[in-house]
Image 1 (cartoon, helix red, strand yellow):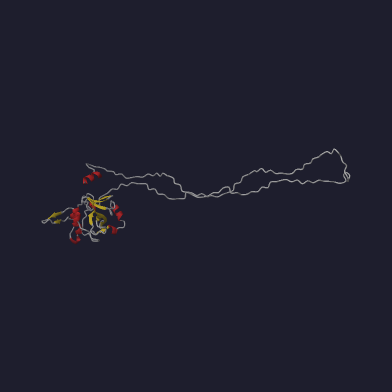
Image 2: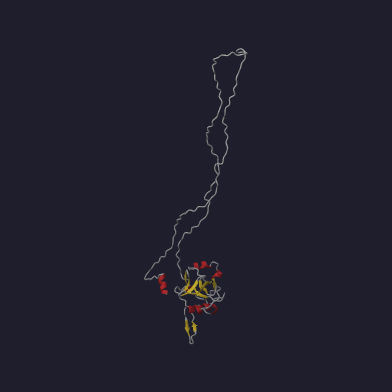
Length: 295
């Protein structure tokens, strides 16, 4: 017979297992009866080892250790973003269901008993005692009994996850990264230019002045031409001596700063929209209409 295993114990990726089944992952969500009556938290799920399908949600109201949890068939769950709803489950049915003991095997007899409670197959005998009738879910009885989840019966969805079509929408996710945009090297070099400076320079010139003697006087001594006489005059002049001296004319400090600029990024994104094709006389109920009907 199929054995049931806790999903968290056999799969480290149980979140993906729910997605593979076409559902959101409800583990950790609050569970409600009709009218938003909270009954606990979905802590785990049971999977059968024959088909690898999720069959039960484990709803615990006592703190998370699953002691005393109720095992509710997946087909009764309506998964919403704000919780898991069991719209057709009553408080009386919930109280009549088996309470799970930690790590016990959820046997054929226990599953059958809970299914009879959920299907309302109970009679009242004399004295007010309520008796469960068999649900007819076993191919045989006793130790060889094999539980029938009726996967081939499309009309019976008690152990089948409700199909859920997800509409996807692309959204831009813009991140920033730093990269080397460039560099600046600062150095210096020598430029040359011709510079002209006017320098006043002095020089001496010989000035010879001749004066006529009107009152001639006789000289003593040598006669004319007896001795040669020469007068030597030293002349001085200034000349330019060019030298160069370096001076500090400017100081340059080098640093950097951060500036912020707005940049517009444009990309094409897509989203999936629902296509509904009607054939024949079909009435479609919107989510709002479904809520009104349930109320």
